[in-house]
Length: 272
Length: 315
Image (tube, rainbow over all chains, first blue to last red; front, side):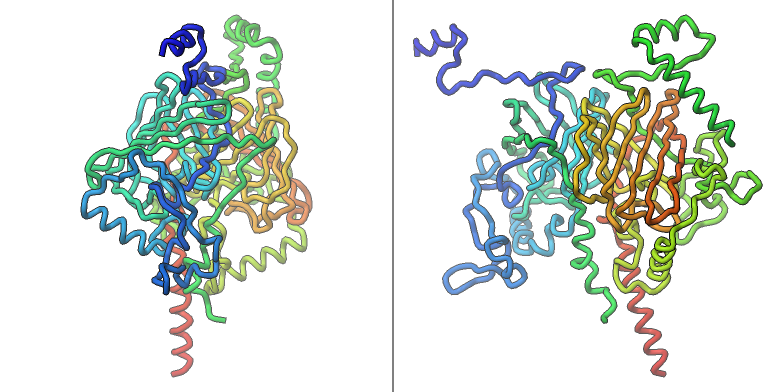
């Protein structure tokens, strides 16, 4: 203990304690979050801790669940990878009716998950999908462009304004708290999910995000979820975000609207 | 019409001349020569022209010059006449557009008309028209914007029409984002001199640089199905080379100029321009695909029509 104190006096962090990282500044003096970022976890599959399993939709097999017919041909490509989860405390405090609804969502994932239809993912799911997003940061507005479905949102960094109507990506107001970008998101509709495990919310959802630079190429992303219609209390997710450091990194369009036309409209095609 | 274009060019040159001096000197020039009314473009924190904001491209200027009379014709239906299934409330009314502009958006060829189509383009036009006129066999028979793949006035290039005619410009060091409201599309333009990529994209592969006060965006690698241009006689294709120029004329006016070079579609390059007005409004979400009730209705309606006429034939 004494040694740790001496080390700290000398400016050397004690064991296990990293010095707070100070990000390079933008020309207007704020931490520079510009660039392309991506989550590297399985949160989009399931935000809670989960072991790997055969598929998102399974049916009983002779010795346990097997992939359901619509996803069987994907084999291992359609299997669910395991993950340690991103929910703090690993518990999502659903109200009893909502927990039943979540399970129903999971059972009908293929037809109910808005991601399957290339619908806008909402916040925070847009952050941790398996696609990068780009932050374009200015003093008055921070634009986030998500590769998935070209989803975009602008964060108002001036005097907060109110959502005029519900939308898929919500209405974002932001401010700096020290080196942390804090974003308050309201006005999301009830049609998006948090993941492929059926975790959902109502239109009363209130999301508060915190983006904190952690090193030159990482930042911590923390998000508090509040929804009095669905949960018994607020709860929190957190995860690192990683900078895409390839030379000439850029987003590549994932305009999946075209890709789901057969799924959505195939039944209405003229029979040849 | 030409003299107005020249007036704009002279104004741009004067602004440029004022800016070739060091910024502090230019500001002194502005304050001393108040009677000359030279306006200088504000700067972003990293010293580039600040074109940021939300810009409306509603216009009363028609796309092509009508007839030979030089008379103005409104680009969209006047409020007394509904268009198709739309309530007239939908359309941007022309009173909100800027005043005192050239008689067409097309400025080159100088007669204000698009150059002729190539023979291949005429075939393409006939093919698209045939698809649109028949009962839709599938979503691919309908226009890109009915399928919610791209918007109908966002191009690129931007050619106004209808509604949701808003563009937000966001500039960070090394990157400009052009965020159009119609189908929430962001074109991210690298400004760092990197070469063009190789992948075809709906929005093309843009690369940007500054020429004095003007943001120049050079785009290639578009998809062969075209871009969001309802007012063109035929969709552009993968051979499009598009150069766009954005210049702030005054605090409320952004001049947008572009040159379309698509040799498989048009027999020569052509250029257009329009004046965007600073909007005090916000950009709102245009969740086209999420709300596309029209497509299943169009397709199932076509199937019902076919069934009805087949049954009619049987009688």
